Image (cartoon, rainbow, N blue to C red; front, top):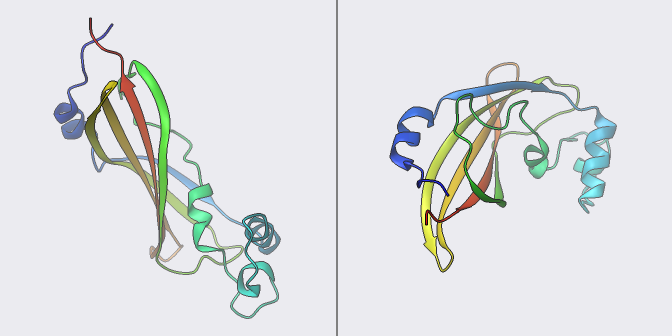
Length: 150
């Protein structure tokens, strides 16, 4: 049994504050292997020799931060579940380019269902190339069905 989360206080303390930075780099073969595993057939994603070779647009959903939640974020009692992913490609991701992923809490909101209140957390990783250009962003949504306070 626990008291419901104070969502407004969590928003005030944690929204839009970068809590993790991590670098990523992919070889051409790794990008091609990823594309093929995803069922991609276009040569610009599957053939490193293609003049326009690049990562498939979904690659940003495979990037994982080093830290899943901000330091000091409260443990939430209840059943946690993956609530979905969303990716926004902005520029091609090329092989052997060091990328910087910066993660922050993008949104916190609630919905009430038949089984009670659910709290949604949206963690966004924005991915930048060495010039500071954002090449993609990926949102990971997590939902926790709160245990009712009885």
